[in-house]
Image (cartoon, rainbow, N blue to C red; front, side, top):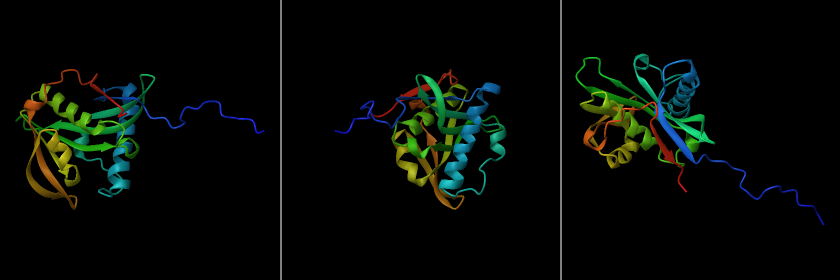
Length: 189
């Protein structure tokens, strides 16, 4: 009779049970978050989608606020699994923009990571005086944004791909005054 070498009957694949979505805090301690967020953007927009060649960094990154979704292991941040950036128009009119929303392919069905990034992006901008929040949304993501109370203002083509200029209904996004703590979301059962 062959000996059973199984030590445990628990599944060997691991998926985090929770994710924290927050602003990247300025300073040396958050360097890994920003580095992983930029690497994730390159993986999604350059390698996976082929929207950009080599890198997607642009002049907006110099003044944009980066948000990240972190997988949590034992309550501690493990890795960046999602990101988005936000920024205010430089003219001081209260118009804010969201862009470069990306979720790691392995985590797209794990939790509402993209939706939680969108919620914190708009809510934190709202707390900082946003009167209007806009984004150029890839057409395949139109349904998600509409479910989240965004309106398409017009169809357009950006980087050779179909997009929609969309506006968030700020009444549906209460201001978040503590974006460094942010929100948590749970993995789907």
